[in-house]
Length: 225
Image (cartoon, one colour):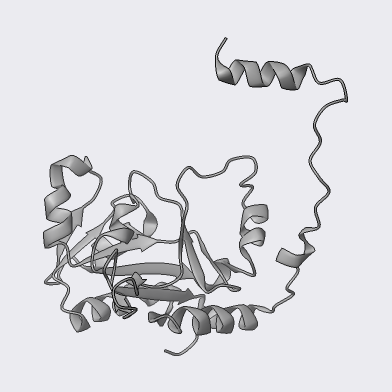
């Protein structure tokens, strides 16, 4: 009998009844009651306080802002997916731009060196945002693997304003993580930073040195940049 089987056998043979979870009060991590405007303001304030950059854009014209960001930051090689609607729209908008589009749906072993040395930025969708902490949450897929948000020096993330929720607990509840927890969800609250060396804050040591959030608003709810 394996150690695992032995543990389960002892649990099944308990004489004092089945195990029950303790009573928990989750009110401290939910029920913030923020309005849409309050969520947006809090999210932007917190993520920009740690050197994240937020650029507002209308949902129907966000790719124009993307083109502007790529030009302003001299991005010539952009890694992105193929299938997600964000990637599809970006590819269409960049057909005539002086930007090489790097396919990411490949075995990492076949282009690992290229990804670390020759990619200027990675573009990803997001699953939503968290107002309480100023965070993005991403659910990587084969079409948008986690490394395109972690390796390139610049990460450009597209976020819909309506997908920002109050707290991380609200995200877990609203998206049913208890029934289908993602194997590799990412929480991103700013560009990579560390102060390990002589307590001097440095950006980009362990990941992107810049995080740009293209915050998309529905036409009736546009916010100026």
